[in-house]
Image (cartoon, rainbow, N blue to C red; front, side):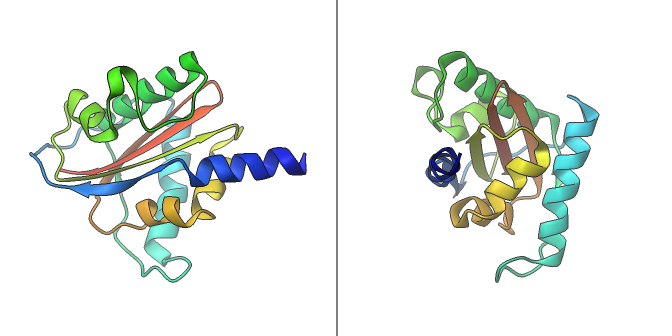
Length: 161
């Protein structure tokens, strides 16, 4: 069990894409997917953002965006179908390309991925305990997020139009 936990932590630490800047514009679309996953994920993430955490100052809460959710869902489905944990997606796509393909014209983005956690609380706890993932969560340059789970695979996508 301890070895599995260590492997999951190492895999999670290696599984975050840094926030990128540059590119087009988008307007926010509201809710979709399982409302409980959305609400719980958004509330947990915003609780860290609005209070500040581990040396990061408080930053404004995020809004849920269905296009970012669609990008997250497509990538979680890809990882689940291929049994792989990677920021590289179908046809070699990177997070920015997948987000744009979902119809979100970003000026900044970030992506966190994980594998194996059973609940929203577990995956958020994993991410906030990883410095690279926490950096994406606490990034003041992003204003929206979407997330999805497929099988054992989670994807969390951040953006700013």
